[in-house]
Length: 116
Length: 111
Image (tube, rainbow over all chains, first blue to last red; front, side, top):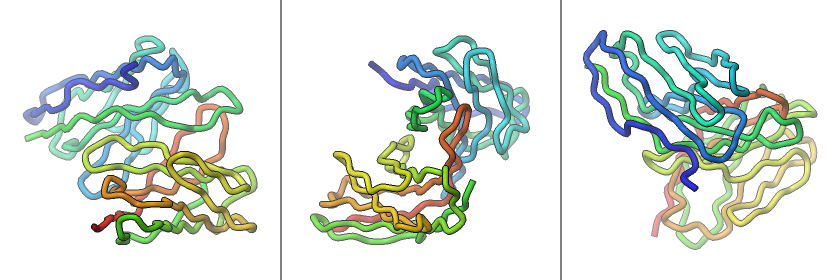
C-alpha cells in the first residue's frame, strides 16, 4: 500500500518549457489536491478535484492546468514554466466529499521543481 | 474559514510535554480544528482533529476551550523526531472542502 505517489521527485526546467507532474493514490479516495510550498511558507492550494471528472481552482491556479484522469490519478501541467513557479509541489488525497468523513489529507513526498 | 494564529516558533525539551497553542477566535459552530505537521522536506502528516470535545490518539491530545476560541495540541513526551512545523487549521467538514495551510509553528525539540 504505497499511499500517494508523486513523480518525478526533482526536476529542473528552463523558462518556457512545459512538463507534467504525476500523482497517483491507491486508497480509493474521492478527492485529490495539488499544493505548492515556497521556501519558508505554508502550503497554497493550486487545484483540487472533489471527485473523478471534476476539477476546481484553488488559491493560486494561474499558470497551471490539471487533469483527473481517473479515480487514482491527478496530474498537474505547467504549459510554459516561469521562475516564479520554482517551488515544492505536493499532491494529496482524501476520502471527502462523502459527508461525515473527516478531511484527513494524505500527502505525497513532493516534487522539487526549479525553473531557470 | 476562520483565521488561526500560532506562535512562529517554540523550543521543547526531549521527553517533556510540548504544548502548542492556537487561537481561532472567529471560529463558527460547525468548524472543526485540525492539526497537521510537516517534518523537514516531507509532505504534511495528519495528527488529530476535533469539534468541541477534547480528543486523544496515539500521536497527540487536542484540548479545545469551552468557548472554542482557542485550542492546544499536546505532544505528551516529545522526541527529537517531533521536530517539525505544526499547522493548526479550522475548516467546515463538508463535501468538496479543502484545507488552507498558514505559516504554522516551528517546533524544535532539544536533547
